[in-house]
Image (cartoon, rainbow, N blue to C red; front, side, top):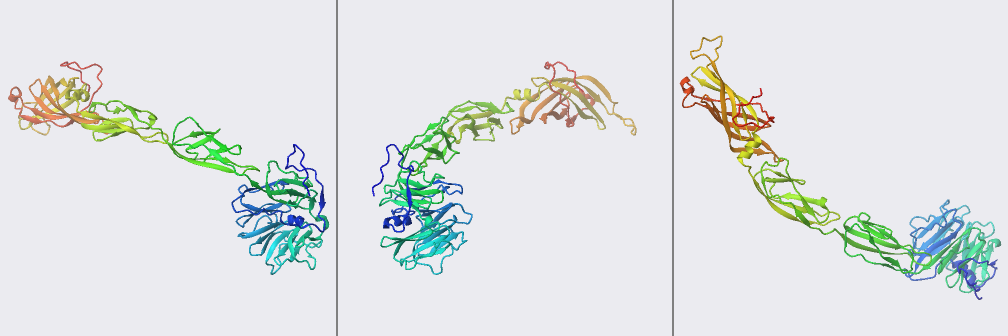
Length: 622
C-alpha cells in the first residue's frame, strides 16, 4: 500500500482527518505483529541512540507527568490513566494514576524484558521467563497462574492478562465477562499476543490472527497503514508510527490525544492509553561551544560569556559556585577569588537531545603592591602618650593594610597605631594580606629609633606648674624637735620658690615638767628656693604614657637649712622625701645637727591660671 501524500505546507506531525476501521478477524502477519510489538523500540546498541519520552492528551491523573530525568528507555506502555517505561538497565519506572498501585513497580524489580499496562494493573516479563503483576486485582488479573514460566510475550486488557509461552501456546487470566480470558481451544504456533479493553488477539506463525472477547473493543487501524509501519491503538484512538519515524493520529480526539506535538522528527515507539498517547523519540545530538575562560583576575565589571548550541537553541548559563560568581543576563559577576565552575545547559526538545558544557576556571585575586608608607623616623619616648598614627597605602584595597613591629618591647602595634614603650630600635612593616578579591602586597619597612627625651623636657612635662607643701622635722638637742612647714611652687623651668615657717623647740606636754631646752618659738616668712634636677627616671604603660617618674630635688631655706631628696610622680600625684642638712653656720648655734624628713603624701595642684614667674612668691593653696 502506498502512503498518502502530505498536502503542501502542512505539519507532517499534525493529525489529519483519517478514517479508521476495526481490525478484521483475519489479517496479514504485519498488522498484528505491529499491534503486539508497537510499544517496544527498534533494536539498537546500548548507549548508541539518545531518546526522550513525550506524551500528549489527557493529563488529569498525571499520566503525562513524565519524570524529568527519565533516560535510557527502550519500551513504553500506557494503561487507563497510568504509564510505564522499561529502561535499558532492566528496571521499570511508572507514573500517573496510582490509586491501586498500578504505577508503582514492586521494589527490587530488575532484569525486565517487556512491560504491559492494563486498565488499573501492570505486567512485567522478566529475563528468566516469569511474569510479575501489580495493581488492581479485582478480577484476578494480577494473580499469576501457578507454574507459569517460559513466557516470551505479555499483554494486558482492561482487567485481564495474556501471556505467550515459548512453546507457542497462550495463557490468559483475570476478568472473563466477554470471554476475553478464555483462550480458544487448539490455539498453537502463536508468535505474538495483544489485548485491548475486553478483547484479546494472537498472531499465528502462518500470518493469520485469532481474536476472542468483545469485538467492540478491537483496536482501530488506519486505512493508510503500510508494510513497515507500526501502530499503537485501542478501540477509541491510535497513533501510526511510519517507517520514516513520523507520527500521525487517528480516532477520537476529545483530549487532543491524536494531535501530534510539533517538532517531532523521529519516533521509534508509541503507546496509547485512554485519552492520551506516548512516544519514544530518537533525538539528534547537539554540541555546545562554550568559549573557555582562562586565568580570570577578580574585577568588579561583569564579564560577558560566550556559548552557542550547534542546534541554535537558547542556552541557560548557571554558576555552580555562586559564592565565587553568579551569572545574570549572560554576564559573569565575580564576587571573590577561588575555583569557579560554570555550566552552559541546553535542555533539548522533541528533535534534539539535552546537552551541557561545564568549565572550571581559577579566579585569581587582583595583584597589588604597597605604594607608600609615611616615615616615622626618630621618636622620643613618652612624647606621644596616645601613640603614633601609622599611614600607608596600597594599590588596591586600602582596608586590608596590616602593620607589624619587629620589637614590640620597644614599639608595639595596635591596629594602625604605634605605641612607644622603651628606648631602642624596631623595624615597622606595612603590608596588605591576601583577601578574597586582592592579592598579597609585600611589605614596606622602615626603622624606628626611640630615644629618651631631654631632662629639661621631662621636668617641664611632669613637674612644672605644680604647687606643693610639706613638713620637715629634725632634732635640736636630745629632747627637743624642730620642724619647718613650707610651701612652694614649681616654675616651668623646674625652679622652686615659696616660703615657710620654722618652729624651734619642743611643745611641752602637760604631764611632763618644763623642758630644759629653750621654749618653742616660730620664725615666720622663711624663704624657700631650690630646683628639680635630672636625670629623670620614668616608666611608661602599654600605651606609651608615663605612669611614674622620679627626679632629684634640692630645697634651700633662708635660715640656712637645706634638703636634698627626690620628687616622685605616680598615679597623677606628686610626693617628696629627703634629708634636712645642717648648714655650716647659722642654725648650728642652736644645736641643729641632722634630721631625716618624713615621707609625706602631698597634695598636687595643677593648671595654674598664669605661668609661674621665676623667683616670685606665690600664694599657696591650702
